[in-house]
Image (cartoon, rainbow, N blue to C red; front, side, top):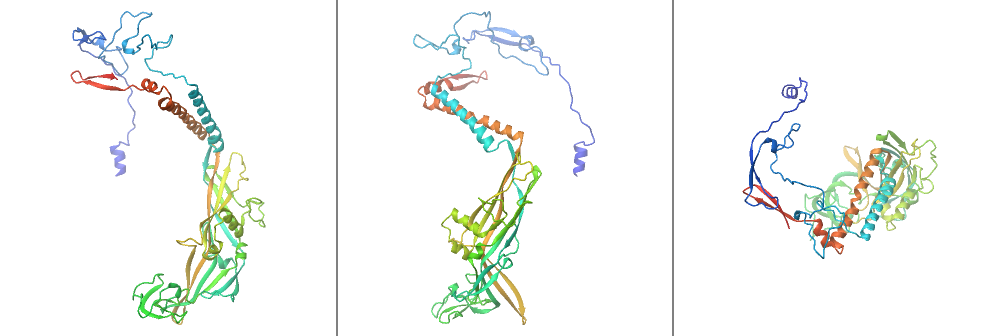
Length: 491
């Protein structure tokens, strides 16, 4: 269908050329005219005739013609001194004389107002605009460069061994057992795109299977012989199971009655085990961030790891800003410097979301070999551990197994610090087009000086009424329906 349209309808089989040529135009006809004195359009007008030689002016044009409908002829002019026409509105008397010697007649009005203050202000604004464009837009903001944002990704490795304390989830007594975690235990999941997660606490519920059991005391689903909120078949508020409608003694405290549920039993927090990381060990964990970015428009690729990188270094924005290895303790310290109100205990216990912002600002005009451009870093706490609406960061995962024809699972709820790495910034290189655009936009700003000066004359100056009267003239259009002509009447 498309081929038929192009070939048949649009004649795709033909070669086309535009015509080149010219026209010979002849105008004929006689017309009656009325002759008036230009200031006295009375009814006693003389009559005459025009033919083509009179109303076709000029007598010949290229591919065009002009027909005169009205002529105003001034006869016998010579150079000398004479009164101005009433149409010029140049009126004067003994007390008012606008007729300054050697000044041109203002057929097109040009208003001159002498004000030293406004003149100085006008030039001052123009000077400030030029300074603003030259120094701020062009030099500071590098208006002469073309910019591109970096595109890239990071490889992140977390290392460190930590001690953990193991408790019964309901009895956090001093008799806790000890164990060790390495990166394979606390980095969950083991790999992410431009992000990593360090678990600071885990709650594990072992040996769960689908059956009927009492709900956990933490669910606050209490009942008794007179009050029973356990509606059969309805889901529990935490969505762990369904109510059976029965009110039974709690497994954690038989003196208290709770709702019975059909779920994976035992329910989380009723018979669970807590694993908590040692905070000092957490702060000593190191993170290696290897980033590669590209500026495709300039055909430039950069990395944070160079040939001379020392892997024994630790990042410090003051002493070693190019080191790619970060300590968690240093990041937490920087967050505290930004906001002293951060609740560290809640952050470690409930988890949080932390942004590592990697900012590239490269000037490729000077860094010819592109070896001296390194990113800077900022650290931001996006989600705290004591947020009243939804505190911290946590998630669950399960490990399933089968024994004696019965399905079991181990549920793990993980709390921790999730770090996300964002790449921002730009790289710039000289571009003549950008320079001219910056200069052109700066020239456009000069109109501000004109607007300020005119505002003063129109609204503030002591002669503002006279200025407005001469600058703006209000006219109306009166139409003569009989002659289908219109006259402009000035007020």
